[in-house]
Length: 149
Image (tube, rainbow, N blue to C red; front, side):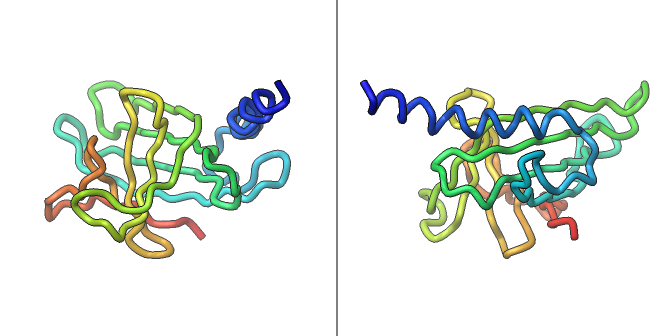
């Protein structure tokens, strides 16, 4: 009985932290309300029917839990109306390697959902946007996010 309680708690703690993060949606926020440092990455990726998509990904990289908290804000720029903004938050996990590149560090956003997203660590301050299977996108266009200072 006690083991089930701890099993559930390891998933509830990141969600609890996200509740604090969601209260303030400003892009300048670098810590959760409890003081947990968030690492924020930002970039503009190509878009087929708009000027670009500004991605802002805030990650709780300090956590040692298997599931960590994140916040992703997508702003569709130059649409027919004003810029469309979509935000989501939840948990992510770190995966070491995939079939294409066994030595990479892969971040799987919302691993329990069908609409999960992947990012690949290229360097300490750069994440690459990956496809829906977690593979590198083969393009000369900019599919990367840079850590904000």
